[in-house]
Image (cartoon, rainbow, N blue to C red; front, side, top):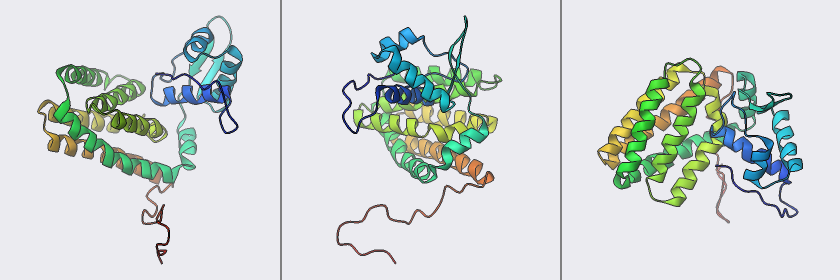
Length: 261
């Protein structure tokens, strides 16, 4: 959930209002709040974040300017989460194409390994919760407008698998992946075919976890992550954006090593 803010900003740290905006944006990206939902009241958010109303309102203004929320006035007003139009979702990704490519690759490496570990360590309570989430996912799959609810379920499924590894560093890595991948997943939220594909993938992963089979669990997650990468890549290619690029370009080179020619 939303973390507390740094109230002692140094020269390189963000203002409280910017921190508020970033944390609420993260919560929206992880679908703690879904499009159409009203954020908690200013009083409640101030209490959760331990900030004054000036900092909170600055953060809300930033989010409104970035079109993540809409602030409505009046008796039934408040801050409401917006559904990003396709053009806006594409624009948000456009400047982060290389990061998105690397993130999708990183996920294909990290999550299968995490799922294999979870298969060996998962307990009955976590398995029961995963079954509950998958049943809920199937129940709302055909409900019109349920794409964002399915995104919230998807986040919880993947983070619960990471919890089952009993390794805080792996949980942190998977959480970071889900957070940073949100802009890419926003592109797919309207695709019924992708929702069906994702639900089938979750069923395969769950079956492997129930059997406590690390190899099958890793394979199932690898297919699931690869399907997401393929869907994002194909969607952006249709819009004239190539996220594959040239992955052979080195990002880091040890001191004294020769340059590639």
